Length: 179
Image 1: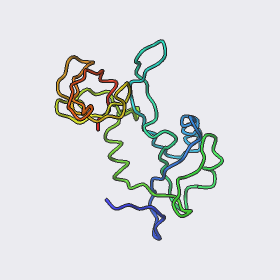
Image 2: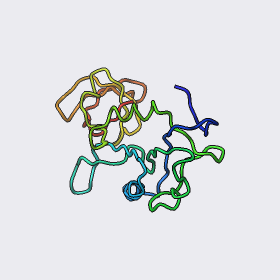
Image 3: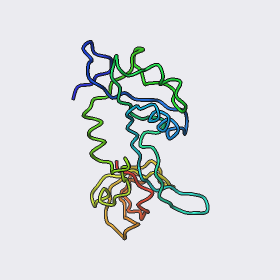
Image 4: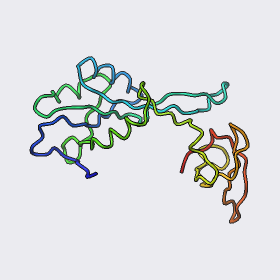
């Protein structure tokens, strides 16, 4: 897959571009772009978050916060409307020209999302024994380790290098990210 960061001379086909949105206004931008008949791909992720008073809850949030993909055709699509669309900032640009996203990347993401464009990051299969993980929260935050054993559906034993020695620590799956 070759990177295509700039407009190509013979651009007659529609290409995917990256739209940069205003903070926490991805849904506003999505709605307004769709109202203007733009084809938009806004992948989201299902994750677990800790909420004060609620404990760990499942939430759906943008896979790429403040970014979404817009399918545009040079010479046909009206690029000028994009900056003034509510919720949108501008297309991501390199050297003053909108960056083109390789279609293979869009296809790869689309193949992994469900019908609602949500990627389920809660699948437990991703945390297998021997798999590398990073501790995302708690006193060991940022440390790398590997899964030593599965304790239950919600807990695993992780081997961490603590003070020069490998130690086993029991952690909640929600505290871990794939490395």
